[in-house]
Image 1 (cartoon, rainbow, N blue to C red):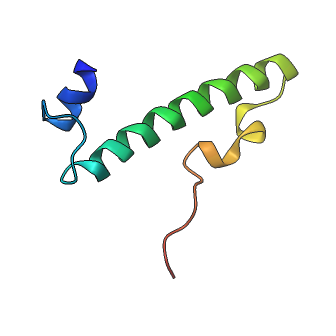
Image 2: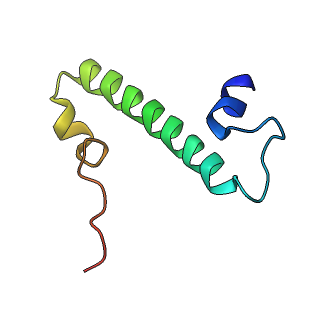
Length: 65
C-alpha cells in the first residue's frame, strides 16, 4: 500500500484526481506480469520470446492514423 501511495503521491488512496495515475500503475504491473509469463512459456517451449509474445515487446497497438 505504501508503494501505491508513493506512486500516487498521495496518502488519501485513490481519488478522482489520481484515478488515471492509479490505473496506469495497474496497467504497468499487469504488463510486467504478462511479460514474465510469456518469457517463462517461451523458455519452456524453447522458442524465441519475440515469436511467443510479439505484442508485449514494443509492438503494441499503433496510434491513431
